[in-house]
Length: 70
Image 1 (cartoon, rainbow, N blue to C red):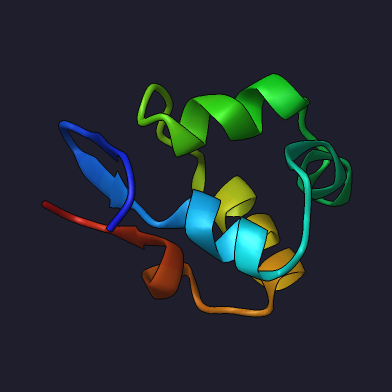
Image 2: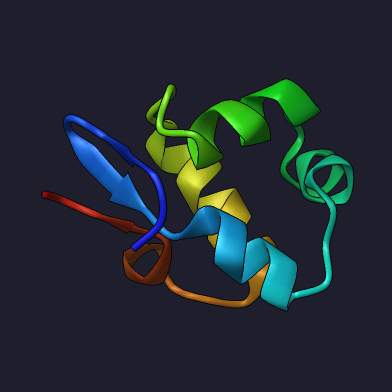
């Protein structure tokens, strides 16, 4: 698992990189700022359910592959 927040573990950065996407491209596809993607990757921000679903759709994976409870 990648970086983590006290309430949520995430695997976003390695999955994003494996998909060949930059933070900027992913942010455009998900409709948020690049800073939001960076904050999620670094465990500083827990995304909404809608945003988590948009990110998963863009990466072609399930939300459960991106985020886990500690």
